[in-house]
Image (cartoon, rainbow, N blue to C red; front, side, top):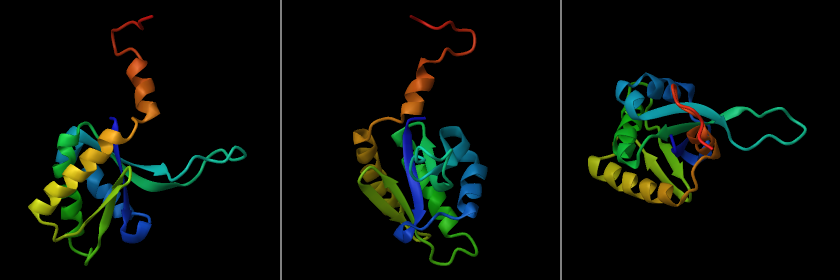
Length: 141
């Protein structure tokens, strides 16, 4: 999955575990995306790793962005979330999704994020996995 969107609460605060659980459990998301925690920055040389403090959503295609935004909107409007705002970041673009985000706003957000994702270089981990043989295939070269 090559299109990765970072998610935080408004102001850059760490997204809550409940949002990650909501995304992971969403049946439509499973078909075109994957939510997971990742480090905010690479670990310094003297450390083995850093905390997993940024929630990311990897989608298979930019066409999935409107549905991804709607899933986040549904979480924001779920009981107990109040007026929670979730920021979705791709490249230099940040959009803010709330429980009252309209379909028109979601479409505009998806367009902005898609444009940003087109200019962001792909995740090197995805490029490495593209070179690996699939079941039943032999490596080329």
